[in-house]
Length: 135
Image 1 (tube, helix red, strand yellow):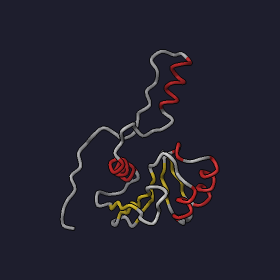
Image 2: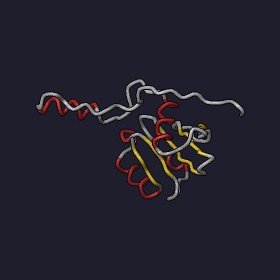
Image 3: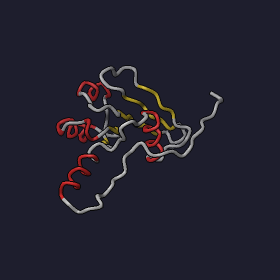
Image 4: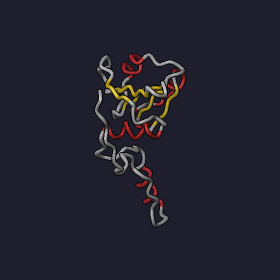
C-alpha cells in the first residue's frame, strides 16, 4: 500500500464529564448516569479505535483489522508495525463470553472494551487472563 492517511482534529468520540452547575443530588445522579458509558451516542467505530490507539501511543502507521474468526462480537486487532505492539478492542454494548474465549488472550495481551459491556464475572476473568482496559 503506497497510499497515505489523512487525519484532522475532530471532536472526541468520548463524552467529557460535565459537572452540574447547581449542587443538588438529583443533578449529580443524572450526570453520573450519563457518564456510565463514556462513548458518545453516535460514535464512529473506526474513529474511536484510532483515538484509543493514539492515546495508547501507537503511531499513524498503525493497522486496524477486524478479527474474522469471532462472530459473536466485532473485535478488532490493532497493530503498530513500527513499535511491534498490538491490542484487541471491542466497542460493542455487550461482550459475550464466547468472544472472550475465542480471543485466547494471554498475560501479555492488551484488551480494550467498554466498561458497560462486561459483567463483573467477565471483568474478573479478563483481568486474570490479560491486561484489561475499559472505556
